[in-house]
Length: 246
Image (cartoon, rainbow, N blue to C red):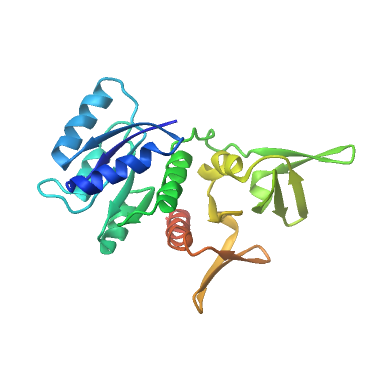
């Protein structure tokens, strides 16, 4: 369960955002602040008092201390909460993701889009595996157990209560949800490109925009990226490959 802070200087927008967040069963508690200075003071008090704060949903354009400046200050905390920007200003998206924002929502906020942001926040705050640990999934194959290493998986595809893992050697069906696998492997560079598809960033060789359609090439497969995930997929892939090059 997540504990979050919502920040917006427009009271109606703040009340609507807080209302929508409180309807989400993954949200345990919502605190609100009507300006950046108050939000910063609240965060210092909460974190200093040992209270858990998982995420901050904040506007960009605010008088005094705006959202981007607040995000930079939050980044200096020993254990900073994750950030989700909620704004009417599309042009600040690049700066927001440079500040390692989990998501960037445009107003007016739709409940479905906010739900996706909460999912990303949930994934971002999940415990991460130990560095260098290559997770292995055991797969039962007619009396035999095949151990499929994480690094061998090109992509995972939801199949009802199961997930099909696709590798260079074939595909394997395991009983688990795609959301559970995403929580388990997101820190290893696996990216949601569609509500039913999770890809390994390390195996993506091409991202293509063509005729309004977005696809990625993973291994020898070409997979469709949903419209709602396209911008986030591009940004995550660019960051991953930039880190590899550097």
